[in-house]
Amino acid sequence: MTVSIHKVAVIGLGRVGLPFAVSLHEAGFQIVGIDTNEAWIARLAQGGDFPFHEPGFDTLPEISDSWTVRNGLGDGADVDAVIVTVGTPLDSNLTPNLGPIKRVIDSLHADLARGTLLIFRSTLGLGVTRALSKYLVRTGACKDGEPLIAYCPERLAEGKARVEIATLPQIISAANDTSYALCEQIFSRSAPRLHRVSFRQAELIKLLCNTSRYMNFAVSNWVHEFVLDQGIDPHTLLEIANDGYPRPIPDRPGFTAGTCLRKDYGLLVQDRVLGDFAIAAWRVNERQPLSLLDTAKRHVDLTDKTVAILGVGFKKDVDDIRDSLALKLAELLLPESEHVIYQDPYLVDQSIELGLTPLNGVPMEQVRDKADVIFIGANHSEYEDLGQQIRDWPQDRRRVIIDIWNVTGFKQTVTILEPQT
Image (spheres, rainbow, N blue to C red):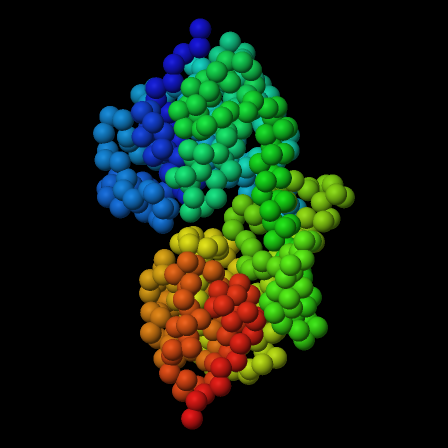
């Protein structure tokens, strides 16, 4: 008979693991949250405000018998399931580095041997789940020779975790019926539907969801860059080309990065010629900061100018700067410009270390008073009236606005506002 799931450990309390752990706690499970960063654990143990911006998650649960956080599972945890949200990094050859996952499994050996269910939630490369299942059997990390392992990938958009945990169907690939039945107990409390698939199907679904989205963005970015290189403004041209046309040209360019979109294509395409298309998409998306810098330099000498980047999160309405292309732009600008600053409503006045030079956050008033050149780095909702704000600023200097997103509503990538005399 399948045991009942009451107590769950979540390993990795970052932007994937922490919201999910809180959701499981709210669904009635006892939660043991685990992270190796002791400073982070100390912060979570304090409770209070949620430690990063994720709408719908405002406060942390208080430490209690049903919610604990620690830096290791340890003895006496007596959990029924362990959910691992530790990622799979790529090595220099774009192949998955399974070292972090292996260390997690080895640390759980005794628990897995007693029959604890092991669930992986983060991205895994093709064939990895099967290899992990075989590793459990080979090392004796399973009860009665039956591995209790499943891959249940998360497909949430950062900033939408609260809504999507409750609305997205859950993909479940399990080693056997017992593993699936245990997963069903966990995910049926939140997901509207469950889809049981094979290990390979689950891996493909997770990788293709991110990689195809990444390639779609690359098409828009390629179109934008190509038109811009012709000396034509892309936003104006595409608006006219697509007006009333039933087969529109992709016209939503912007900085496309983040830890998942940047990495998952590599897990999908390793050692496969079919991956050339995805690698080309990566090249297009990654060169957008350089393309915009070159565009700006055609209109203004940056040497003695103050340059501001508005929005440095890797995507709209998040405070996550990991793999942000806005910061890649900043790194390119620092050797070119006298003074580079940024403004972001989610990172108020913070200093970001970039190599030898920190990038300092400033209030919008300082951008208004000091900036000669403005790049829009992220299309935050707070910038919806940015175009009108800029037009209302004192026209005491020549300003060059570089806006790949058309956040300003100026309907052109490059807008030059001359001083009023």
